[in-house]
Image (tube, rainbow, N blue to C red; front, top):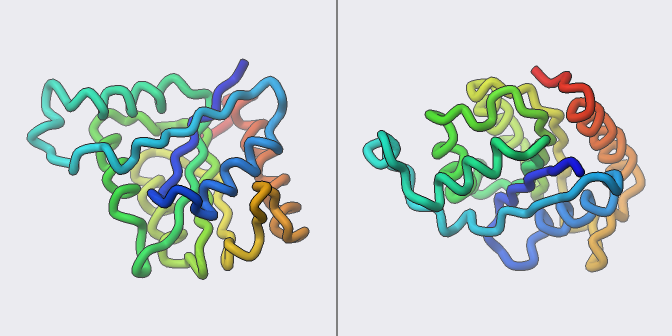
Length: 176
């Protein structure tokens, strides 16, 4: 069984980003397991002094989950024209460990508009040696329902194509 480690950039209990992750879980092949990281708000504030020899236990677990996964799914909103602080904090904890390096990544920004976060996340992932399969889902709240289904046909078609490419990269090891 292949694993996809999903990181939701929203800390809201019922965010549209979480709904999209759950919708993707329904769209991936049955021989894949999606593991949701739901402790993003519990990671300590990034501090390079704590990242020297023995980082906090929660950070070690987070990094190990990334390294052990076959692929990574990132799904985040945009807050105040940028990435949410807790999401950026989580990414910052991976820089020195190179946890994301050369991993197949499906990167989604799902927000009202989201262009600034989309651009920022792609720049950050480039620095982390990742070439993500990236998708922007503007007006995300209107494109997913309470049953965690993508209701907009165009968004669903693009998402299915991106999931297909993502799964292919995992299977072939073709990322970056």
